[in-house]
Amino acid sequence: MRLIARTAGLKFSPLIVLMLAVGLALGSVIGERAIRRGLHRAAGAGATLTDAVRLRVEPAIFAGGLVVSRSRHIIAGSAMGCAAGAAVGVGTAAVAGIVTGGLGWATLPSAAAIGCVIGAAGGFAIAYPLDSWALTLE
Image (tube, rainbow, N blue to C red):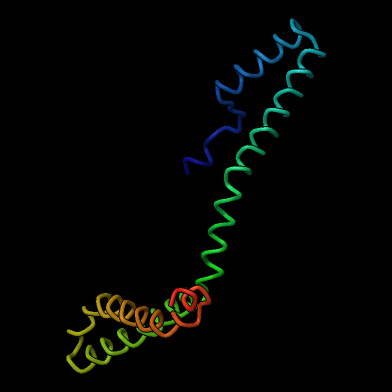
């Protein structure tokens, strides 16, 4: 009911009102040409900053892509092993819960975690020889 009783009115943040007032005041004092020059310089600084960030971030992304590309079998094997191990662990805990009348259901999270770790380790062990860098190290 309180929402219905509110009056519809525009509310502005004091910061926005202050910025608009300063902008209007400076527009009449400084002039349109100076404001356009300032905006152009600010846009140029933004482009320069964007290029600087790109130049620093791009090598890290490239190196990360190399690591993922060279370890794709290990990553996929570990992920699939984790999912399969967690499913087996949860299934086992669920069956134990049914057999024990619900007492075994408390072990669902830990069974999933233990199954995930064991499955990921198995997936890692199987997928390790498939990656090209692993073969060059031996």
